[in-house]
Image 1: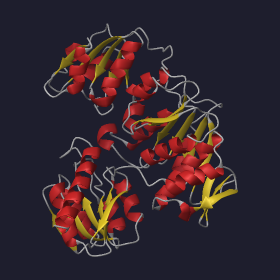
Image 2 (image 1 turned 180 degrees about the vertical axis):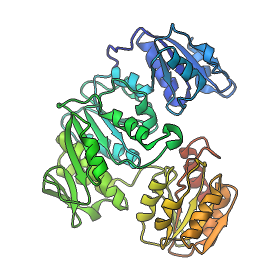
Image 3 (image 1 turned 135 degrees about the vertical axis):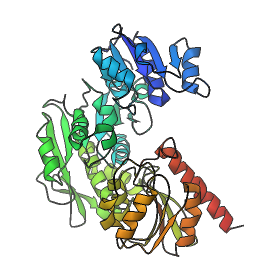
Image 4 (image 1 turned 45 degrees about the vertical axis):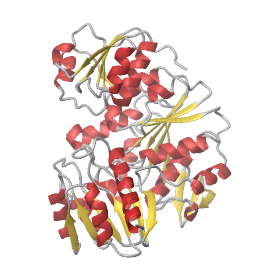
Length: 458
């Protein structure tokens, strides 16, 4: 249900459509804002723009001239992926018009209990696990997930009531454009170096992530990975109650893993081996979710049921199929080196790796130790192919093959692999050199695996 918002009755420009831009434009109209939508894509093939025009919105397509905005506007709501170097955004800032993102609007319009999840890796898995666990909470009628997971928060909050909970995955791109966003529970799953092409420095990236807790009070909760000094120090920035989790040490309170078992407040919950999805990182993801579930009274039995049945989220070390004694996994969401390292560590079997994508200017030297001894074949493609080959050589991988695109990479990886191997798509790079999204890339991989399987049985 939509409540009164501080953004009601304002003059707004929405820059960039896709799912979130379309959703927030509709929400702004519901709170009586004067809305102008600007999208650089042409009208042809722009379904969201056409739908808004049909509904009577002021929509400008194929253009983002800075002169489109003037000092009569109260706010500019930008698509999270549009950089602040965009000329229209720079002009808005020159006019002292605040530049915000869709979650800022959505949070201000909702009476539901809000849980926010951020981190470099594992956000989608943690968000999903929390939502599944909170389905069992006696405190809520309904539990929803939204945000960077692929569902606009602006859509979900319109059906969520004050008796519901909304678990939101929040990227650094979304969080940087927030002012008053205030989740009751915030989760910091981890922070590595990522998206520095957008944020420019690691400090900027961390500061964007920490927006998730900047408005929290002692009545709120901040769930923090306790595995590094850096993350423990970041917790000190928050005014919320800190609840740690760790798979590397025993803790006096909070969730932790020790000697193969999982505990909460020193109380045994389950064995690590009963978590269905593979990998040490998924133990950490489970611990983060347990901390949130326990705040809201979820029982041990319901937590065990979720963790023992949850098979993983799509595009994140997602099991796809098995044939010819090879297992295929889709990890398209691994858009950075750290995510690929996590995927490689999840398997004990030999790996035939498919990697490559958008060149953000970085090398892949940090990937070398994880490639060494784990990956026996690598198939590379995309803008980063040459850099990935360099890393593969440093890792002494004996079999390196370059192809032009993902559809060529799948049959080639099968050809290079042996019985008992894992064939893993984990690109270590963004998808935007050849795909619009990592989801599109992952779906392409799944389709190519299905075609390959069909060819094996012809």
